[in-house]
Amino acid sequence: MLKIGYLGPEGTFTQQAAQRYTRNEQEADLVGLPNIRETLMAVQRGELDLAVIPFENSLEGSVNIVLDILAWEVDLMILDELVLRISQTLMVSPGANWKELAEIYTHPQSAGQCRLFLETHLPQAKLYLTSSNAEGANQARRKGKTAGAIGPLEAAEIFGLETVLQDIQDKDNNFTRFVVVGKDTNHIPAAHNKTSIVFSTEHKPGSLACILDIFNLWDINMTKIESRPSRGQLGRYIFFIDIDGHYTDPDVRDALTMVQRKTNFYKFLGSYPMAETEQNL
Amino acid sequence: MLKIGYLGPEGTFTQQAAQRYTRNEQEADLVGLPNIRETLMAVQRGELDLAVIPFENSLEGSVNIVLDILAWEVDLMILDELVLRISQTLMVSPGANWKELAEIYTHPQSAGQCRLFLETHLPQAKLYLTSSNAEGANQARRKGKTAGAIGPLEAAEIFGLETVLQDIQDKDNNFTRFVVVGKDTNHIPAAHNKTSIVFSTEHKPGSLACILDIFNLWDINMTKIESRPSRGQLGRYIFFIDIDGHYTDPDVRDALTMVQRKTNFYKFLGSYPMAETEQNL
Image (tube, each protein chain N blue to C red):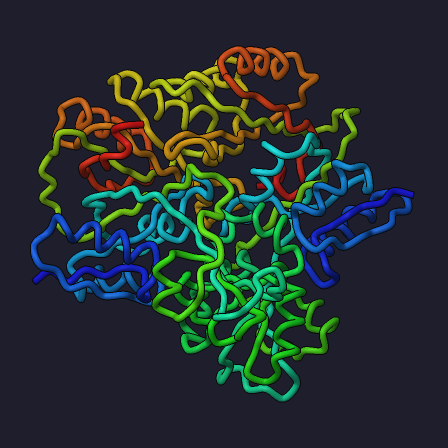
């Protein structure tokens, strides 16, 4: 039986993504881990076969710690991706009046997705950022009627909170992209594929433009570019790029060979089936 | 007298940056604001002349909320920048044993800069992320001997905490770039200048490469590129780019004119003197 870790505990959006993912899989044992690093490290050490982790949100952007760990600390591949619509729910202890909340507990990503809501409707409440939305709900329950939490509807049920308002994110168009990572290197092409890489270029003018021109030259569509500090010097970056196509496609293979030649750090992060919702964008 | 806001309260790294900035200025009245949005909005409404806010850290990357607000919510210019070396200090209530801390209060950026330290030395401590490091120190003081805080040395003094360990960030090379924003549009060129813009391109292959090629064509060095979600659809982005040079330089002016022609959203964010430390990199 496959052992699949997710960013836990129970009651997180990532648990929902993991459950969705395993619907298409053979039997699987789902394990909630306390944070993203431990989840990824458990796969790296072979204690888990796969892990499901949040990667990017349409309002809040990339989950930086995932990018940093994939680039520097582990040798794992992205094997699949899922896109889920995220609905944020405000929850309170039974009987509490949400307009009088003094404290809000939630994950930074959820807080970022509900910034305007919090500033407009709960300006008096202090915001406490927690390691997961489930932990936020847990804290709110412990603190009592002055504390609320924001997160998935399911967390309210698990922690015995009342849901007050649903869909409180600042924009309806709130989607999170989750990725499934593992050590498997047997990437069989699907109908529509995506490939992820990370690299750094020489610190000279035009070096990033040169890389993007390579993809143009081979008519490869770039679907994402994201920079992160190289952790060396302020002003030096590494770049995460997603492109359409599978590394076994001759054009993708040739373009990536050229990219490797023109970069001083290069890491292949996987070829995997494109999530269905993204094909429909 | 100039009224200059900063991300407060007293005891934050941004206060240090604001104090450093006003050393070169005429008399100024420094005002600590509770969060980044309120700081920027106060300048937008004309209640402050200028604001000093954190922009980018060499370990943790850009401060996303600053990018988002500058792009979408205000009409402000970057007028200056400062780069400060950031030293993170672990502080506790007088007499507390730091190895037995159950809770750590700190700002997300500081937590990110000390991730390995926390995982190695304080794996048992729960992490609570606060709106500022000063607020973290304040919380730690209120919670008593089981709680610690991470932040600038000055915060320990202000909140009556004892400093336990200094320089606990994961890498010594920890610098934060602060920017000074205001409504002034009179940007007199200095000896070395930088220009910041934000834009989005058409959603078609090669459109970002086209923009970078423009800078190449005019021999303009790009010092930073950062993407943020366009907040519309997952997979659509806006791009923040910094280039060397001042908008009154003929080459910069001509290149930016061409960039405007090739983008469907474009906003000039200012030309300003390059920080001294960056010239020495």
